[in-house]
Length: 514
Image (cartoon, rainbow, N blue to C red; front, side, top):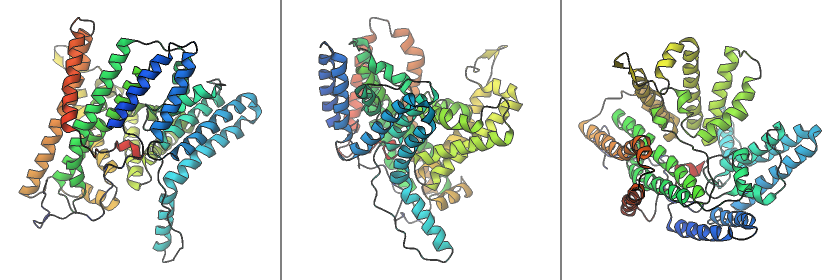
């Protein structure tokens, strides 16, 4: 796609934002190698279930297989994973045995896990900002950044192991004595790299009980995994090059910026929810059920509702372990404390995504809208009642359009702007994009923007169709005789699409960098 700048020439930035190119640091769900890996694990897993102690052998297979999966490119990643898992396993046991020292023991867990994140994910960020501040004062410094390779999935598994220790600390969970079962919970390859962030109280009981082969669950899991692969390869990776080319332009026009932001909203949803579908589908094929991480997030009418639909495992983790403690236990929370806790919580959500100021802005932006919508709900409950889920229905012979309008407003005012903040890594370019006229462009730029928007709409169409199929068609045909032929025909169509769109050097999943 060629796009002219204001002077009629094509200008690209020399150092654009990081594109999600082929740089996988672990085995990828959409690699051919993963298909062979999953097939081998699946067959061996269910053969082991026939043995007298089949569950234990199955769990051992999952741990070994997960280590192969995670250490496929960089085996040293397993050292950090093993340290985090071992630390919290023994800390939790110590907390249960020595309740009088539980505060210090929990601090040990937090220090270990947050220390890993601080060094591998945020060290260079802080050093760069210190260097910038020192130079801004006209001084010199010998500080330098380090060439640190971020271990893939570190933000996910550290949160998961910390939640285990915290739940034991709170008395909500008993510390486990089987290190093998616990390792399955931490290292399960289906969700190790990019979630969902599972709670021990939900996943461990599944791991500790015997799993029986269920053909219907296997077929459902396969359907979910195939659909996730389609979303990644045919939707997200089709949009990616168009979006990337807009964001490397020196001075993209307003229509290009905003159509690319809309496109990125669809791209990141298809990419991340596609990963989650594959994770949930493969786990279901092995008799385990993972948390649903997405529930049609762009149909949210408010920001609180959006975060109940988008990356659900993270938003609920942050709510339970950060936001609630910041709010306090008082029955009535002051306005100042509420606003402070909300903004702080969502700023941390943004910073969790990466050590860049644009992620901090992304989190603070959503925190501000979360505060606004919550205060509206407190003071104008009638409006909230009109836009809450399930209100688009006939009332006194006419359709209530309030929710539909609220959904459209939230998508463009919150989701699209948030996508721009998430995708654009340079603060000066964010300021320029937000301050320039959104409709001012040359005819060539308008043509390019229409191409980006057209590709986005075409790529979004399968997501819209799938929502209708899941909501209205599947409940009516699931128990019919022709459900299986319909299911296998869908596999064939999705498989054909993935075969056509498959690239040898495929784009990595976006959330692998977090």
